[in-house]
Length: 119
Image: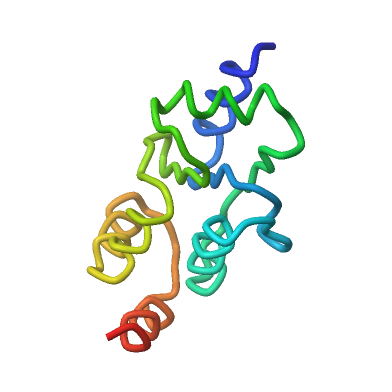
């Protein structure tokens, strides 16, 4: 199975996937930590893929999405964005809308607390 096959399988068999440096319980870069922190705080169930553990996946995810940076968030098989986009979507409420429309469970009160803390 190629890296592209593994990536496609991962993003299509999990509702939410975060390709990141490190793991959701131990992120290894600030950007990955920020996105994982948002998802963790909002109570989102998601698969985490540590790109530092596999160079083929690390490069493969960049090719798969045609996006040069990590982390990368996928919801229902679709690429959503990296750290800056996820931060903006969280603060604007767009991430709530995406999760709601995609049938992804999350804590709406936690999402509101993030916005309140950043207003």
